[in-house]
Amino acid sequence: MKYLVAICRIFVGVLFIISGLIKLNDPLGFSYKLQEYFSPEVLNLPSLIPYALMLSVLVVTFEVILGVFLLIGYKPKFTSWSLLGMIIFFTFLTFYSAYFDKVRDCGCFGDALKLTPWQSFSKDLVLLILVVILFIGKQHIKPVFNMLPTTILALLSFVFCFWFGYHVLVHLPVVDFRAYKIGTDIKKDMSVPEDAAKPVIEYTWKFDVDGEEKEITNYGDYPDVDGELIGADTEVIDEGYVPPIYDFSIEDGDEDLTDYFLNQDSLIVVVSYSLENIEKNGAYILKGLQDRARSKGYTIIGLTSSSEAKKKQFNLKYDLDFKWYLCDEKALKTVVRANPGILELSKGVIKQKFNWHDVDKLKL
Image 1 (tube, rainbow, N blue to C red):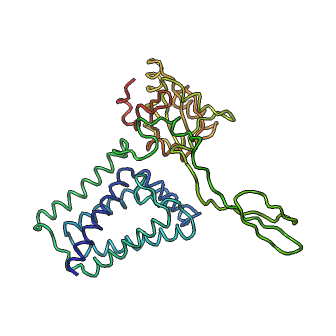
Image 2 (image 1 turned 180 degrees about the vertical axis):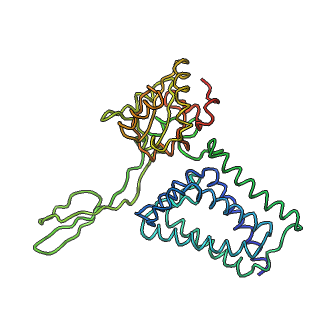
């Protein structure tokens, strides 16, 4: 039992630290995932949505700290009980998402590693077994060091997690795992090669044939049936090739201007997924950014999901005259983890990307 606990201790501890640090690198992204879980369509806990960011930081910090505690053997009873409670909760959550098909990506490893709902549940089920072994054999979890260095390491893990979480919120994730990292060619990553795999969709056709319901399953061809069509169900068997970027657009009313702007040499894009929720101090720096960009020969535009009325009201309030274009909110949250965020594009390639706090670092 002693050696089994030692193996489980290392595996679970390292996995918790890695998983937690990946999410702590992008607490805003994990908060968006929590908002999805709290929505009426999933857990129906809308009252928790305003606290998603705070909960995001606390949960991932606790995850990292538990991993550290387990490896150094700090407070084994508290650690084993906490691990058991956390993994039971996450196992239930991933099973609920998978069984009811509510959330397609659990966010366990952020954007670094995408898992299907059933893969997430299987991963948590394995972890649950390992944590149960640790719980049963917690008397074998001994401190690696003496009390003083063990306590110092535990304290340092707290300090580091809260500092790191604050740092990436004020700036941007240290490692960008998303499709819009610096150097990305948006046009290229939106394109679909001619020889790309096509989606495979299974159709189940339902007909009324002489008063009896008849089902015919095929892959899209309308069946030659002498009867009245009642309905049709579809199931995606294989999504085929999905480009890294598939929901980005720059629209003005009914006009799609994506290609036009992605072909410009010097373009500054201000990204605000919601002007209603924009950080006020960030809004106040946009006037200076607008004037500086134009003085250097750049075109400056905004991207938001807010309404036309809100765009006009916002520009009037903050003395701005650059034009805001429409883009999907989810896409904008993926482009940059800031509201507002600033990008420099050249021919569709992302050259620079900043949180509004770092606008002075923008080189024009």
